[in-house]
Length: 183
Image: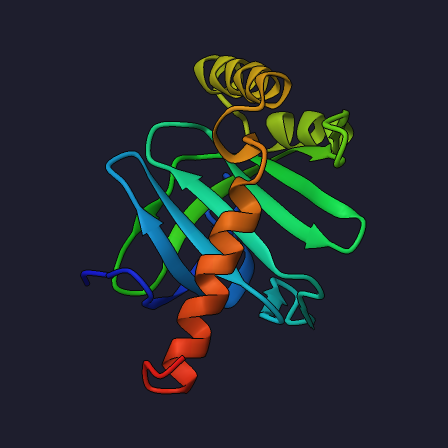
C-alpha cells in the first residue's frame, strides 16, 4: 500500500522475538523523505501486547528512519518539548502498518537537552534471552552513541523549533480537513 502526506497510519512495535509489543491506532503522516517519515498524533489509542490500552495525553511528533536504529518522539508539554527516543530497528511499511523492532534502550531528553539512558537492565536481560548477535549489539550501541551526538549537537529532530513547526503544520491541516479546506 502506498501512503501519502496527511494519510493516517497504524504503528506496530515488536520485540526481537517477533512478538507484538504495542500498537498506536493511528498517526498522521506529516512529512516523508528518502530516509525518514514523520508522524503526528494526539489522544491516540495505544494498545499494549497484554490487551490493556491507554490514550496519549500530549501531542507528539515522531521521526522514524530507514537507515538509523532509533526513532524519536518529540512530546509537546506546557513546560516545554520533551523527547523520548527508542533504540529500535529501521522502520518498514506494509499494507497493515508502519513497523519496527523495539530494542529496549531508551533515551529521555528534557527541554534543556539533558538526557538519561533508560531501561539498560531490560536491554541486558533481553539481549541474553533473545540471543542478540554480536553484530546487532554493536549496531545498537553505535546507534545509541550517534543519538547522543545528535542530541548534544541539536541536530535533526532535536533542532530548536522543529517539533513546534511540525505540530503547527499538523494542526493547520487538521483544521482545514474539518472545515473542508475553509480556514
